[in-house]
Figure (cartoon, rainbow, N blue to C red):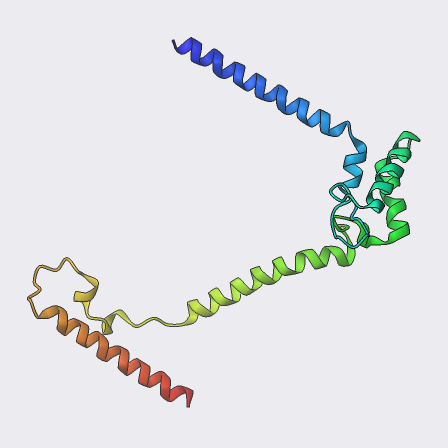
Length: 172
Protein backbone atom coordinates (compact mmCIF):
# COMPACT_ATOMS: atom_id res chain seq x y z
CA UNK A 1 0.00 0.00 0.00
CA UNK A 2 2.78 2.45 0.91
CA UNK A 3 4.66 1.51 -2.25
CA UNK A 4 1.65 2.53 -4.35
CA UNK A 5 1.51 5.93 -2.64
CA UNK A 6 5.23 6.45 -3.07
CA UNK A 7 5.17 5.53 -6.78
CA UNK A 8 2.14 7.75 -7.32
CA UNK A 9 3.95 10.62 -5.58
CA UNK A 10 7.07 10.10 -7.73
CA UNK A 11 4.94 9.97 -10.87
CA UNK A 12 3.24 13.22 -9.82
CA UNK A 13 6.61 14.92 -9.29
CA UNK A 14 7.89 13.74 -12.69
CA UNK A 15 4.70 14.83 -14.42
CA UNK A 16 4.81 18.22 -12.70
CA UNK A 17 8.46 18.71 -13.65
CA UNK A 18 7.80 17.85 -17.27
CA UNK A 19 4.82 20.18 -17.37
CA UNK A 20 6.86 22.98 -15.85
CA UNK A 21 9.77 22.36 -18.23
CA UNK A 22 7.46 22.28 -21.26
CA UNK A 23 5.67 25.45 -20.16
CA UNK A 24 8.97 27.27 -19.64
CA UNK A 25 10.36 26.04 -22.94
CA UNK A 26 7.27 27.06 -24.88
CA UNK A 27 7.41 30.53 -23.36
CA UNK A 28 11.10 30.88 -24.20
CA UNK A 29 10.44 29.94 -27.84
CA UNK A 30 8.45 33.14 -28.45
CA UNK A 31 10.99 35.99 -28.52
CA UNK A 32 8.40 38.42 -29.90
CA UNK A 33 6.32 37.99 -26.73
CA UNK A 34 9.42 38.45 -24.58
CA UNK A 35 10.35 41.67 -26.35
CA UNK A 36 6.82 43.11 -26.41
CA UNK A 37 6.54 42.48 -22.67
CA UNK A 38 9.57 44.74 -22.19
CA UNK A 39 8.10 47.72 -24.08
CA UNK A 40 5.28 50.08 -23.15
CA UNK A 41 3.02 51.19 -25.98
CA UNK A 42 3.24 54.92 -26.67
CA UNK A 43 -0.35 55.24 -27.88
CA UNK A 44 -1.29 56.70 -24.51
CA UNK A 45 -2.92 53.65 -22.95
CA UNK A 46 0.04 52.91 -20.68
CA UNK A 47 -0.17 49.17 -21.35
CA UNK A 48 2.68 46.85 -22.11
CA UNK A 49 2.85 46.35 -25.88
CA UNK A 50 2.13 42.64 -25.43
CA UNK A 51 -1.27 43.48 -23.88
CA UNK A 52 -2.16 46.44 -26.10
CA UNK A 53 -4.24 45.91 -29.24
CA UNK A 54 -4.12 49.37 -30.80
CA UNK A 55 -2.84 49.88 -34.34
CA UNK A 56 0.55 51.10 -33.12
CA UNK A 57 1.05 48.01 -30.96
CA UNK A 58 0.12 45.79 -33.90
CA UNK A 59 2.69 47.61 -36.05
CA UNK A 60 5.33 47.17 -33.36
CA UNK A 61 4.57 43.46 -33.06
CA UNK A 62 4.89 43.03 -36.82
CA UNK A 63 8.13 45.01 -36.92
CA UNK A 64 9.57 43.05 -34.00
CA UNK A 65 8.61 39.79 -35.74
CA UNK A 66 10.48 40.96 -38.85
CA UNK A 67 13.50 42.05 -36.78
CA UNK A 68 13.66 38.69 -35.01
CA UNK A 69 13.38 36.89 -38.35
CA UNK A 70 16.25 39.02 -39.73
CA UNK A 71 18.47 37.86 -36.85
CA UNK A 72 18.48 40.85 -34.48
CA UNK A 73 18.78 40.09 -30.78
CA UNK A 74 16.23 41.17 -28.19
CA UNK A 75 18.68 43.73 -26.76
CA UNK A 76 19.25 45.28 -30.19
CA UNK A 77 15.52 45.55 -30.86
CA UNK A 78 14.76 47.05 -27.46
CA UNK A 79 17.71 49.46 -27.83
CA UNK A 80 16.32 50.68 -31.17
CA UNK A 81 12.95 51.46 -29.55
CA UNK A 82 14.65 53.24 -26.64
CA UNK A 83 16.70 55.26 -29.14
CA UNK A 84 13.54 56.27 -31.02
CA UNK A 85 11.11 56.83 -28.13
CA UNK A 86 13.34 57.35 -25.09
CA UNK A 87 13.60 55.52 -21.77
CA UNK A 88 9.87 55.93 -21.11
CA UNK A 89 9.20 53.07 -23.53
CA UNK A 90 10.81 50.56 -21.15
CA UNK A 91 8.42 48.55 -19.00
CA UNK A 92 11.09 48.11 -16.32
CA UNK A 93 13.47 50.97 -15.58
CA UNK A 94 17.21 50.66 -15.98
CA UNK A 95 19.00 49.52 -12.87
CA UNK A 96 21.55 52.32 -12.83
CA UNK A 97 21.89 56.01 -12.15
CA UNK A 98 18.87 58.09 -11.27
CA UNK A 99 16.40 55.30 -12.03
CA UNK A 100 18.04 53.09 -9.43
CA UNK A 101 17.92 55.81 -6.79
CA UNK A 102 14.26 56.51 -7.54
CA UNK A 103 13.43 52.87 -6.82
CA UNK A 104 15.68 52.43 -3.77
CA UNK A 105 15.17 55.77 -2.01
CA UNK A 106 11.68 54.93 -0.63
CA UNK A 107 13.00 51.67 0.81
CA UNK A 108 15.85 53.44 2.59
CA UNK A 109 13.47 56.16 3.80
CA UNK A 110 11.08 53.57 5.23
CA UNK A 111 13.88 51.73 7.04
CA UNK A 112 15.37 54.97 8.38
CA UNK A 113 11.94 56.21 9.49
CA UNK A 114 11.23 52.95 11.27
CA UNK A 115 14.55 53.14 13.12
CA UNK A 116 13.90 56.76 14.15
CA UNK A 117 10.38 56.02 15.39
CA UNK A 118 11.56 52.92 17.26
CA UNK A 119 14.40 54.85 18.91
CA UNK A 120 12.06 57.68 19.90
CA UNK A 121 9.47 55.28 21.28
CA UNK A 122 12.15 53.38 23.21
CA UNK A 123 13.37 56.62 24.85
CA UNK A 124 9.90 57.47 26.11
CA UNK A 125 9.84 56.25 29.68
CA UNK A 126 6.92 54.11 30.76
CA UNK A 127 5.21 54.52 34.09
CA UNK A 128 7.57 53.13 36.74
CA UNK A 129 6.43 49.82 38.22
CA UNK A 130 6.70 51.29 41.71
CA UNK A 131 3.81 53.66 40.93
CA UNK A 132 1.52 50.98 39.51
CA UNK A 133 -0.52 48.94 41.93
CA UNK A 134 0.90 45.42 41.80
CA UNK A 135 -2.56 43.91 42.24
CA UNK A 136 -3.47 45.17 38.77
CA UNK A 137 -0.44 43.38 37.34
CA UNK A 138 -1.16 40.18 39.24
CA UNK A 139 -4.75 39.15 38.54
CA UNK A 140 -4.26 35.74 40.19
CA UNK A 141 -3.86 37.25 43.64
CA UNK A 142 -6.00 35.31 46.11
CA UNK A 143 -5.72 38.01 48.78
CA UNK A 144 -8.16 40.22 46.94
CA UNK A 145 -11.37 41.18 48.56
CA UNK A 146 -14.56 42.27 46.86
CA UNK A 147 -13.82 46.03 46.98
CA UNK A 148 -10.09 45.77 46.21
CA UNK A 149 -10.50 45.90 42.44
CA UNK A 150 -12.34 49.21 42.52
CA UNK A 151 -9.68 50.67 44.85
CA UNK A 152 -6.93 49.56 42.48
CA UNK A 153 -8.71 51.08 39.51
CA UNK A 154 -9.28 54.30 41.43
CA UNK A 155 -5.55 54.50 42.32
CA UNK A 156 -4.57 53.84 38.73
CA UNK A 157 -7.04 56.45 37.51
CA UNK A 158 -5.61 58.96 40.00
CA UNK A 159 -2.09 58.21 38.78
CA UNK A 160 -3.13 58.70 35.15
CA UNK A 161 -4.83 62.00 35.93
CA UNK A 162 -1.70 63.20 37.76
CA UNK A 163 0.50 62.26 34.80
CA UNK A 164 -1.94 63.94 32.41
CA UNK A 165 -1.77 67.18 34.38
CA UNK A 166 2.05 67.05 34.32
CA UNK A 167 2.08 66.66 30.56
CA UNK A 168 -0.50 69.40 30.16
CA UNK A 169 1.67 71.82 32.15
CA UNK A 170 4.77 70.91 30.10
CA UNK A 171 3.02 71.77 26.85
CA UNK A 172 2.09 75.26 28.00
